Image (cartoon, rainbow, N blue to C red):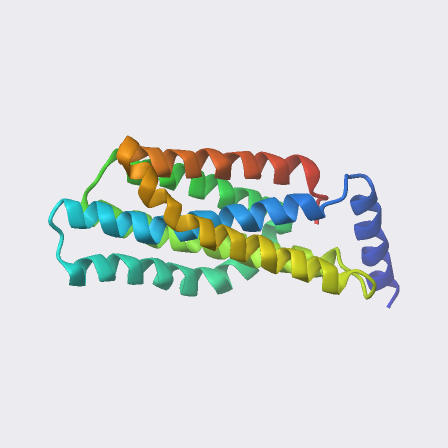
Length: 196
């Protein structure tokens, strides 16, 4: 019992050393949702433009969901080993790199691999954010925080298809912009979140 109390006090002390972590959490989930919302439609258009068949395009989407399904349990283990902050930051950085890779090199086998790893990275972002939002909330602000969390995630998914419009500036453009946003969210998470 004393050990649990000491851990709780340590977490509260760590949280107090940082700014309000809620904006960083919302930025991270918005970025994760935006990347998720952009990758699916933009990838489909890009692959269709180079003559890839519809079943294979659907399979590239499925492989990312397979990565998310496998990445869920892995993310929980990573949080136990490395902490929420490092798992979240790592997932965002990984997504930033993978986004740029998608825009730089268009190859179906390559995209299968990247999309699978990206699914695992998305899982680490989503799992970390959900853990964090519950960790920093209390009975007084839990409803508000979860409402803001849901709003940020829904808004990001809604904006995702706008990436198709960015394709007129080049295949790399929507992926590069999303990668930059993901990298920025990783920096925000690293500097604003407590070491939980």
